[in-house]
Image 1 (cartoon, one colour):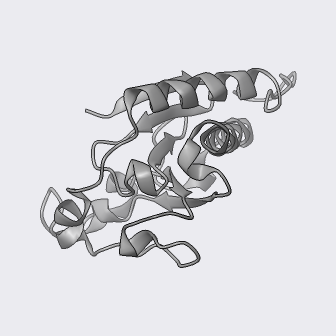
Image 2 (cartoon, one colour):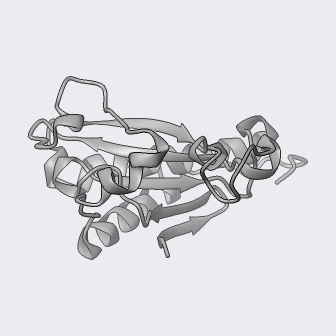
Length: 172
């Protein structure tokens, strides 16, 4: 079960079960939008704005509190494609709108990354769906203390820098 770090009107920030970047190579968190959608254009303008603020606060928080990201950066990857693989459950071809769920991965990028697929100055290299579990098996998630620090900083950022004014007459 993924660890939920923060929930707000912008969605959920989680530490995923399957970590795709080791904590020492920069870390990996996922930001889900406020409701399940197959494509980001399905969100209302306010939902999209709030989700974007949660994504931005997550990235800033990771840069602010994770020591491995000193002089590092982030990669943002909107995902949902592996759910459509013919080998994913249920097996076979899938209806995109019924099976794909938008979520955004936030990967820390450390100058000292040890894994060859996360080398500094290179694009990350992801395996195909069939090799993903084995590839990710050796990656350690962010620690509980690291997750708490990120979540605390996210809350501060959302209450301050990324606070959206409530607009009258705007759908939630």
